[in-house]
Image (tube, rainbow, N blue to C red):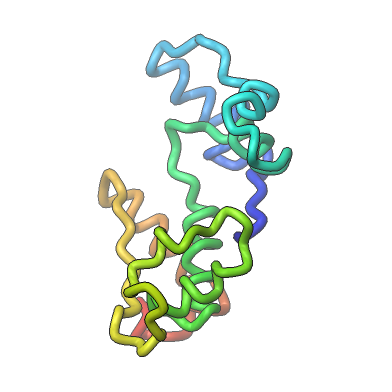
Length: 144
């Protein structure tokens, strides 16, 4: 969908300083699943998906991914119907995922808000600041 890649060294990547601090505080010293583990678990997904899952610290909020998904959503015109139309060409898309009536047209009545659940005010502020740094959302007061 957005061809997301987890940047090595980002706070939400395994092996980053932030990730190592979280692991040591938590006392979690079990090895993370490997790319091969994810490939066995999700055989229908490509190597890029498995690599991203293996690189991702699953205890962290991936702000980069949130920004990419919201930017994609806004870029396809906002609104559930337009997003569903944009997904039609993806091989994993199923009509059962579409909230519109079968065969229904996109009349824009399904809304265009984005609701993201985050665990605390610091995370909310971090995501809001990251979204405001994008060209697509940074200069538009109505999208804040």
